[in-house]
Length: 305
Ligand code: GDP
Image (cartoon, rainbow, N blue to C red; front, side, top):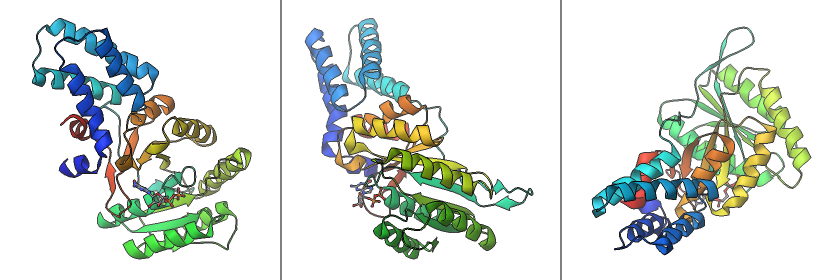
C-alpha cells in the first residue's frame, strides 16, 4: 500500500485529498457539490458514474447530519468502492487449456492495445511475475510490423528467463502467434504470452489481423485471457480505443498503464462500465517491478489515505 501510494502521482493522490477537503467544509452547499462533481469529472470518472456517486454521497451525508472527518472518509471510501466494484474476478487466467485431442496445453494470454500504450512493457513485466511464481513462460513477438517491438520483447524475455519466439521481419503476426503456442506446447511451458500489433489508424487491418491471430492460436486450444492495455494518461481517448478493440476480440481484462503519471485514474471506473470487463492489472512505472494487481481497496485507500 505504501508503495502504491508513493507510485500514484501526486496529482492522483490529490484527487482523493481534494474530495475529502471539499467534503469537510462547514457547509456543503450547492457550489461545493458542484466542485466535487468537477473534481471527479476531471479525473475521467465519467458523467454518469460521477452523478451516481455524488447523489449517493449527498443522500448519506444528509442522513448522517453531523459528520466527523472519519465518517466522511468512510462514506467516500464506501462509495468509491461501490463505483469501482469489489466483486469482480481480477485474476489473470493462465491455467492450462485443453487441445483438440483433450491434451493439456499452456495457458495462452493475448496482449492487445494501441502502440505506445505499454503493451510490450506489460507483456515483459507479466512474464517476470509469472516466472517469479515458478512458471515457465514463452513469449510470442507477434508485433512483427515494429522491428523494435520484437527486439524489446526479446530483451525482456532474456532478462526474465523466457524464450521469445519471433518470425521474419514484417512476417505474418498470426503465424508467429501460432508458432509461439506450438513452441510452448513442445516445451511443456506453463504459459504463452503473445504481444500483438496495434495500429489503430488502419482499423480494418487491425480487425482482420487480431481476429486472425486469435483464430489461428485457437487451432491449438483456447485463449484463456485477452488483456487490453490502455494508457491512463490518454483519458477519454482510451475509451474510444477500448470500444474499437472490443469489436474485434472479446476482451477479458484491462491493464491500465502509466497510472503513476496522471490524475486521471477515474478512467478505471469509466472503462469497466464501457466494456463490462474488470481492470486486472495496473502499470505504475517503467521498471520490471512496476506492474501490480489491481486491488480496489488498496487503490482507494491510497487515494484518500
Ligand atoms: P507498446 O508500443 O504498446 O508496446 O508500448 P511500450 O511497451 O513500448 O511502452 C511505451 C512507453 O511507455 C515506454 O517508454 C515504456 O517504458 C512506457 N511505459 C509502459 N508502461 C508504463 C507505466 O506503467 N508507467 C510509465 N510511467 N511508463 C510506462
